[in-house]
Image 1 (cartoon, rainbow, N blue to C red):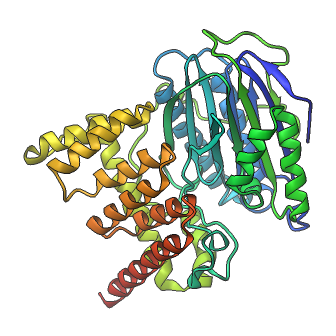
Image 2 (image 1 turned 135 degrees about the vertical axis):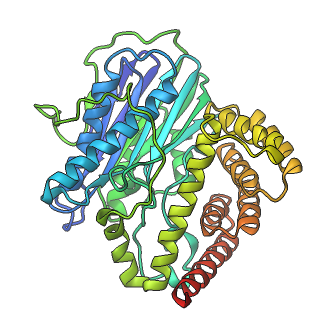
Length: 449
């Protein structure tokens, strides 16, 4: 679908959503939501057979609409996290209660504008980009294994062209979204898109397009042309938002919003009585449900049982570690007395990162590394800070340091993604080889036991 560029309180926006040309994808399982008054923009890419993916992505947009159509007071970062937790539980509950919907899930990328700030949230491989001062910044890191064609053909991955998600809404009992708050300046553009766009269009082309085309809708139309010219193998959705001015508060604007994936649902999806205001984000439990394992089963058929075991273990250990540090940051887990000062630095650094205070986060992490040089969490978070700043080479080096300290396969995947973003494909391939080597060795050790 296409439209004319629309004006709203902060500036203007355009959008496109299309099922593409793949005959095996007759239904557009992408959805998007625009709430002009709230300054909210979101895209989602559904996963699941029998149109379950379409239902998952549409349900995600409906839940967001319900909870952001009203004024949000208090900590909006926390509110976003609570809504995502509620949405994940609702999707999972529906998938478990309705057999045709078993295994359904969805990615999500979200932009929420505030006076002088923007909140960015994502789960999965849908992305948010920021364009400012002639440069494009990728604000999100895909929750996927690195795609072979982008890395130049690592041997064990060369037979697949699919992304394998390590996080999505509806897969596990709990999900940890990546949420951060950044400064907002006039003359900034944002691009939200599903992977149907980024499979066909490079970051360099996106940067050139946003530098050349000031009209958001024409930029979206050009993205559609590129996707069609290059095969349009997947559904694709994009929203381009240009912020011309910083508003003290949003103004009411005509229309109130736009819906993707067809007309808005005529009825709201059945939901539990629990409100996201009442629900705390709990720790991620071991994703041993049938839907989670089934997601990786196809991958296992291609790569064998050994790599499958390693992948599951890497994802679980990495996410569990993230939960521990997240709970530390919220004061739920006391720091060890011997490393109290170092943990205090880490907690403060994570908080600074989540509200977009990258310089402060970087300073605290560098100091923390001096206090506790054997703790892999410092270089890991330092890598995330530097990736957010667009310093991809430094980010890759930090992720590699974290991997060397901990021996974690997941950090090698982050390093590969950062090297790729830096344009150093040889190093990206080497990081992927390290990941494969460690995964295979760990799986072999587990089988030996």
